[in-house]
Each structure stands twice: as C-alpha cells, then as structure tokens.
Image 1 (cartoon, rainbow, N blue to C red):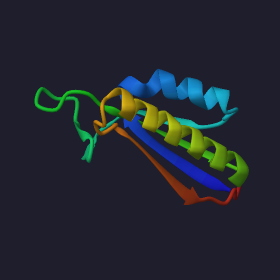
Image 2 (image 1 turned 180 degrees about the horizontal axis):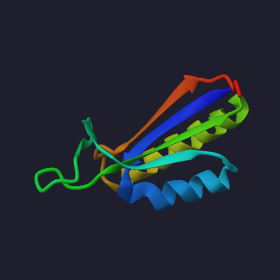
Image 3 (image 1 turned 30 degrees about the vertical axis):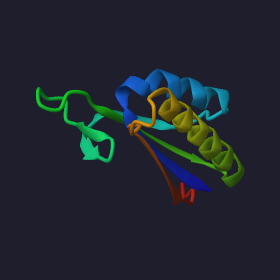
Length: 101
C-alpha cells in the first residue's frame, strides 16, 4: 500500500476533489486550512501572505496509487501550461503504508 499526501492551495480544492472522485478514491482524510511555505509561495492566511493550503491523505493499493499519481501529474502540467509556466501550489508525496488495524 501507499499513502499519498497531497498538499495544495485551497483554491484548487474543488477540482482536486472531483478528480479523486473520477479516480474512484473512496477513502481519504482532508485537513483544510494548513499553512506553510514552499517553492510556489507562502500561505499563512494573513494580510502579508493571504490564502491557505489544504492537505489530503489517502491510503490505497499500489496500482491505484500509480493511476492517481499519473493523473495528478497531468493535472499539474495542464495548470502550469495555463499559467505560462508559473509555479503551481500543489505537491504530492508517496509514503509506504501498512494497514495495521
């Protein structure tokens, strides 16, 4: 199994939730309004750094994880093309996962 950790600007939430539904991701945990900084900017929901991020954790079998990763890569590439190469505030990480209980 893999645990996918998706961190993204909250403005992308609806598109990403729809994409996960299309990919038949039926179980995940979302943490809205997480804050941080990275290559695509800072999100602290303050006057100086407006906006916030969301985070989704989803455990799934390897085959499904591969499909999700490939589709999220395409989604990010499409956004980058629309934004003329701008940094897209979306990161995806994969962590080995073992279902214990």
